[in-house]
Image 1 (tube, rainbow, N blue to C red):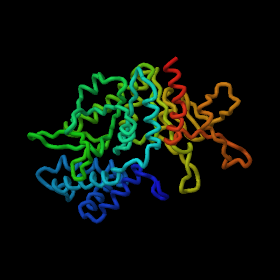
Image 2 (cartoon, helix red, strand yellow):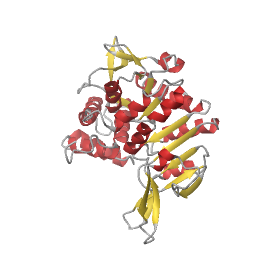
Image 3 (cartoon, one colour):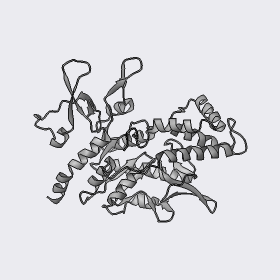
Image 4 (tube, rainbow, N blue to C red):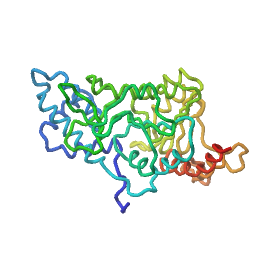
Length: 370
């Protein structure tokens, strides 16, 4: 990528700022943001914004709501989603990206149990990498012209094990809602439509049945996955700011003591605060991990394992140290105690995680053949 081109796509916070900037000249959008703030919502969270617009739409039949008509709200939803699509409809720059490293690991052995990816991202970068590498996957939709969501295929799980699963919990930029014979249907297109009713979910909003069905089915699939005996879920890039997803994970873990969820977090346990002090970087994650024994959280400098918080201290001399993980142990100067080194494990960086997965492909293939 050329200098200054990263990131390829923004995170939710910066995506929200981008939408606000792009639609700032729209007087209806300005009115809506003002009302959203009055309602105590966060105007810098695009999912809050979409929730608010759709909530107003549901009660707007027959009259204006907060100065906005039903037509205004329909137009606003389309503009918001189209702006999101224009920003996220990107291509990976080559075939050596972290996404491709993940795909290489997924296809490295014949698996008895299929790999399942759950993502709250709307972009198509995972799909691109899997297709670049010829990794077959199932995302809940079937058909070739206007693929439709097949609830039975998701629930019955009769798809071949060599097909990986890709579950897009919050929808996708190539999912659209279209009306056929007076009934709204959700379709997944082979191409991204700029001007369409895109299915992008704020997680906590209840929808009419056509919008609700894929979302609830995929959340149920997340719960079923964690409830399987000895299931193992790795979280990368998830900040624990979605309470519905949090509840699904914790409830499933509570019901299945043989399951394990490992949250790999980007950054240190604490971050700088504007007042000069320190604050917890992921307070929701820490709160849950300190009371749920089979939810472990790793940050760069500390971890919560079995509800216990501690700093990393691994070294090449530890008898129980994993040789592959040791490659990612970094010694850094302690910012507080001069002359002291502290250990960091940076698998919370998606790039480092996928490099780790690529490094163990040889050993996993040997295990498969042995």
